[in-house]
Image 1 (tube, rainbow, N blue to C red):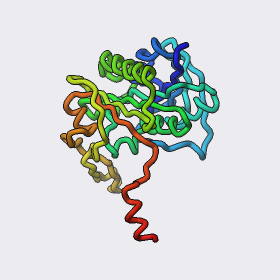
Image 2 (cartoon, rainbow, N blue to C red):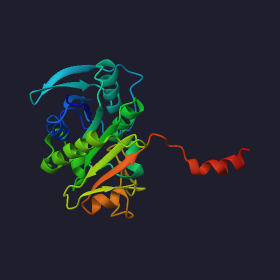
Image 3 (tube, one colour):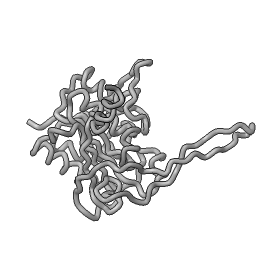
Length: 259
């Protein structure tokens, strides 16, 4: 029997990246698409607890799918507990835009969905594709202009290897970032510290009242061994992530402060 995959994302159920992943995985697994109805980028692991979640069964590209009126975490929870899918693996993505460094994985809805799945007991992989023009992240993801041939190959290969060899015991999520132009191979990495030089741009509306845009350019590079550096040099970055955020090295010092 084929393994079962729950496929979700944060760009929305119509995203070209999501359907590239479906095409890659449907040959090796029974894939069920359960994804947000609309764009949900940068919502992290937020969850809908103050409003109802409406879910509709739809057909896209000739394939049945579930459109969830909520966040990526909501889609995972609906898939696991309402649709009762019982997947062997949750795959989140392919996100249009890279999710690199501490900074990005804490805000990424793509990684957030993967973390939620793992927290609910199903190991997960998040896939993201680097964009050369950061403006592409804000365009309609259903009309993404990226070429997905290489991305589909990598998504399938990574998942096949995990099915064959098993999920690493000490990881909860595998975060995979694919360069826009792959010139190298796979590189197992650690998280970089930052992806953006954070800034704020102040503007005035027609009535003279201020409003703000959070912005900032990308870091040019990062240290050897980080996910940021790997993608910058054309390698596919594979980063193991754990749900446990405990800072164990700080415990001794805290024991001194709070004896």
